Image (spheres, each protein chain N blue to C red):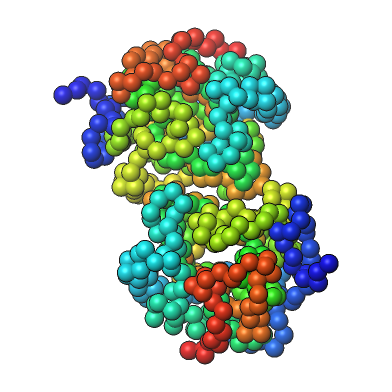
Length: 292
Length: 292
């Protein structure tokens, strides 16, 4: 008997459980309008075209490329499953001054703070490259499921910002989301292998919904894949089901990704009982962002 | 020195060569209008929504499912690269009466005969299942490149029909085509390994364009991915560059695929010098279709 409302990877069968946390936490203020907040609360995500200016996008891309090159071979650089091409660069809010400045901006941390009703800190940051032709899919998942089981995030009080550093089109493997899926917690099947993250960051196979569970969420709600120019930002709730297909286009689809967690939701021991994942994937050091 | 205008897989560097064959061959007649023929000639493909009626679609799906079950374990049934789920069922124009009837219909063989200016026969047929969640990508390729090198098809005088047996959406890995790419033959890099088809039917890695070559074709032309209800047919030229992403949706994307070759373009020895691929992938027996 457990009193964890978000228990997962323990049963033989998937289950749909109700979310017990708010989506918009009381007391926040920031740049979003009431309508935008209501839309986020209803759908579990919000698309803001051109939210980050082009110059910042260009600087972030250039700096990330330099850092990925300098840190090749370290654990912050993750390769594609079928090649040595860079798939993700982790912890960019520490290694990149441009990313750090973006993270604490009113338009990113300010929005997160408004949604979560508290100060926030960066739980995880990364650049996902999705290189042309070589960029493989990210299978469907709720981030919160992994963060709860593998990192010890207690409640659904975190929000992600995905910033398009390149244009997002129908053909370069854009982010796909299941509207309203954030209101349901899918308990996944399967046991977590040791050091699961070393595999899952390349191709995730545990902590993902079964075909039935996904069909349950998509039924009536459909799937959306926001498109937009570089600088477009998609904010999405930590429990919104999302994924993306491979990139078969001749252009990369590169995103800068920040996870903002509430300072009142700091990590505890992982609920799955294994050792926590390393610091560059899920920081345990809470440094509240001072808005720039 | 060779006089083969479509030599491929011999050099260290890709090359773009001009097509030396017509797209619409003289003397044909059939159900397409002059405008439709002109559109096919210009783009290298033609989309006909609802071209095959729903009842035939339903019967074809049901019969293919029975045959795939009955023939499990034979070489006509090809599995997905990462699972045992059926990816393709070959030679359905011989094993399925429904598929055979569709193949020789005015709306399929009749169109092929109109485009190719001669009687036609089925060079290859298959059902591509692209199952929900498990269905992996088909990398970009020109069919003709493979058929010329591995099967011995002399000229660009074949046309494919891809019949949607399920709805084709943005999210279930629809066919993607590069408009006007049929006018350029891309000589590919790489040597063909023995029995290449055993690997390539699951995941093709030889006889595919490099990133540069693909960018050359896509530049200015873009990519299109026709969507439509079950029964929609896409006719495309044997040299049109095409591919499709994986299917991350909870619904399968199943297509019935016929290749019609001109009876005046019968296979010779493979231009790549290897033994021909087996009969169920590329028939060497020319049986002109008698239109139903």
